[in-house]
Length: 123
Image (cartoon, rainbow, N blue to C red; front, top):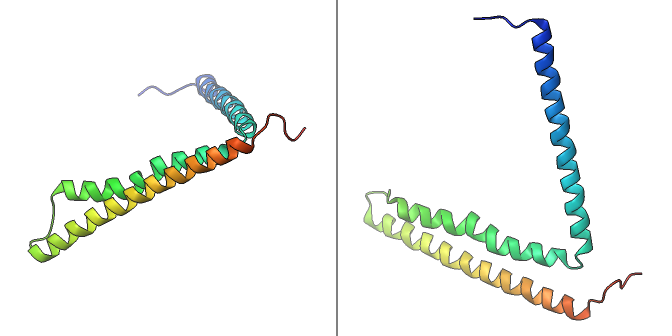
């Protein structure tokens, strides 16, 4: 095993520091641009609500319940197995309805905000 000389070791550290600084500067620039775009959109919260309704409810509630049903591992007790299946189907149906209602509500808010929106209203 070859030992690194102090010069090679310092080159590696400075290279890593340079990469971290470049990454930090590009991440900061990206976050600044995204923040400016978010501030420029008048009803950005309503768009975030749509994304949450489409992404949050299915990923956190519906897909795990369906995955548990699909996995097929269940207990030997048939009554308990049927109860678990019914419960998982009920969870999937209930939270699918929550996702649809959340999406409808967010679209309703966007439409109501768009009716009252005018360009450069605050200036």
